[in-house]
Every structure is written in structure tokens, then in C-alpha cells.
Length: 255
Image 1 (cartoon, one colour):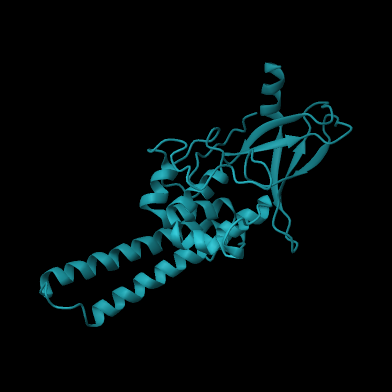
Image 2 (image 1 turned 120 degrees about the vertical axis):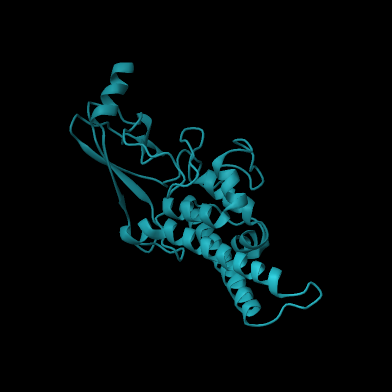
């Protein structure tokens, strides 16, 4: 069995494609059978650090046969359910990268999750070129918000008395930027969550059809962390802090 697994690891060919119909996108893999395999044979492999369960179709395959397996690109997770609960943020430990990122750099963490889901910076399905810039754009937006906040607070520190109310052009610009980024963050979190639910057939359970926007507005950190855990099986894949998808980059497929 060990030799057979090594054989699969060396000779299994996987390529990714996405359906572009009106239905929610469902990724598929094209598998070239390295040997005669029985129908129903299941094994797990990784592509770009994301785990996939591959099932051999009924009737089995012969060496060299190409078969397609379609499924949500969310690792080993049951359709119709979240991988775990909304408040299980510390499931993998308080120092886990996704736990820390979703708490301290939630917009950056959202960018990582959007990259996994092949979304552009607007939270919509994007072309490969657009997806490669999603993480960078959200990092820049986050940095811009910090720069504006630091500049405004330092200006106030030296130019406004503590008893004076905030006013002027600087205050107006600061508030506009702050509100705009807050609204943007809520929108992309809600859109990303809705897409994840659609791909996994997860129904809304609360808030009368507004669950995504409610979670994105009032429980951002836990919502982002849950999406991160759902879109990657951290029991198999190592998380990373500041990579475009927040995952360990794997060049050799593991079975």
C-alpha cells in the first residue's frame, strides 16, 4: 500500500477548471489514472495547499484513463453544513494564524479567503489576473486606513486642544475614509460568506434572509475566522500569516 501511495503521488496529474454557468461555481479536477483503480476508491490529495477528496467513478478506471471529479473546493467538509461553529475561533489554538489575522487584520484575512474562493477585490467572481491582485488590493486598503488614522491623530495631538471639538477638513476626510472602509469591509465579508454558503449548500438559519450581512456587521472577527476554517482544512494544511491565500504553498501533491 505504501508503494502504491508513492506511485500515486508521483504520477497523479491534477488540473483545475471552473464551471462558469449561472449556477454557483464548483471546481473540478481532471485526474489521469496512474493505475487500474476500482470504482468508489477514495483518496485525499492537495493542490496548492488545499485538500481534495477524489472519488474513482463507478466501474473503476484503467491506467491512463482521464476522469473528472466535481466538488466544492473546501477540503473535507460535509455539504450543507459549516465545518464548525461561528464561535469556535480557538479551535486550532489562540496563536493560530487565522485566529490572529481575523482579530487584528480582519480585512487582510478576508483578502486571503477571497483569493481561495477565486474572487476579485469586489467580492465577485474574477478572472485569474484579477484574483492574483485581490490580496494585494485589500492589503493596500488596510494600510491606507491606518495611514489616514495615524496622520489625523498625530495632527490632532499637536494642533487641537483636548477641550476643542473635532472639526475642519482633516476631520471630515478622516470620517469619510473610516466609514467608507467600514462599509466596504461589511460588503466583501457578506458577499464572500454568501458565496461560500452557495457552494456548500449551507442554508441561512437566522435573521430572515439577512444572516450574511448581520454576521458581517456585528460579528466580523468570528465570521472571518469561520470562513477561513471552512475554506481550508487546517488539520491537514498549515496556515501562514501573510501569504495571498493564508496557506502553506505546496508544490508536491500528497496522497
